[in-house]
Amino acid sequence: MGNVNRMKSPLENSEWAIEARGLVKHFGENRAVDGVNLNVRAGTIYGVLGPNGAGKTTTIRMLATLLRADAGSAQIFGYDIVKEPHIIRQLIGVTGQYASVDESLSATENLIIFSRLLGLGRTDARNKAAELLEEFGLSEAAKRPLKNFSGGMRRRLDLAASLIAQPPLIFLDEPTTGLDPRTRNQMWDTIRRLVDTGSTVLLTTQYLQEVDELADRLAVIDHGRVVAEGTVDELKASVGTSSLHLSIQNTQEMLAARETVEHILQVKTTISQDIGKITAPMADVDLVTDLLIALRQKGIQLDEFSVQKPTLDEVFLTITGNSVNENGPQLEEERV
Image (cartoon, rainbow, N blue to C red):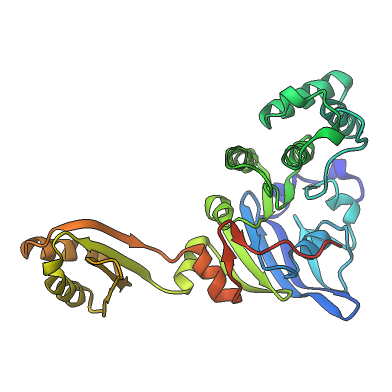
């Protein structure tokens, strides 16, 4: 088992990239992780959300064999994190810390060193460095010392370094924090490409939109425990039904419109502070067609009509009781 060359491909070895049961970690009196269970299917993007101090980073560090669990068990592609850490470390990549071996060296020089350490020859290492710098928009800064890089540039270089070998499992600990929207979108494309070419990604993030865009499934961790798990749509559905929003052209028809909506949907409606707007819960979206026909038959003209699912902001607030800022939950947690 210790000879990695003899083992099967990780994706053949198990359909699960991560299987964790009852992970626990104490720091003094603080029970930072309190029985976390996770199942991450190979070849997917799995998101982890949680408020400050929830235990996300500590959980990742245990799964990556960087921190020993006090209790519980976990397997990475079927290999035990306690008994076989030497194998697991060859199957994973971890971001979250700045990637450099020397602040005075350039981005190219640092990536070449990482590549050489991973066994690439001189030419391949130089070509790989150039390819990654181009992909992450760092070519113009390739010869600049890392000590002169901005935080966003360092974050991009960090992910680039983790992709030199493109391991089967990649832990991305808030990879787009501090990036501008354009660069963040580029990073999202890169993360999707990683999964398309065979990797599995475990992603923690402070951006709810990031999870909405990327994650096949996600877990919400609060006070060291997984308090909700599922697809984005499943979590949205767990906090309530979709809602109907419509605006009436002629406000004198408001009463007739409201009665029609309540009759067709069999619900109570609310009137928005904006004159001419009606909101109603909508458990059965198949009734949309019936409602539109009924409104047209009564000659009621609409300005706007939409059916909206609960937002991830609402999900996060409902599940954890924590508020969400414009970028996402107030996340950044313990660094151990």
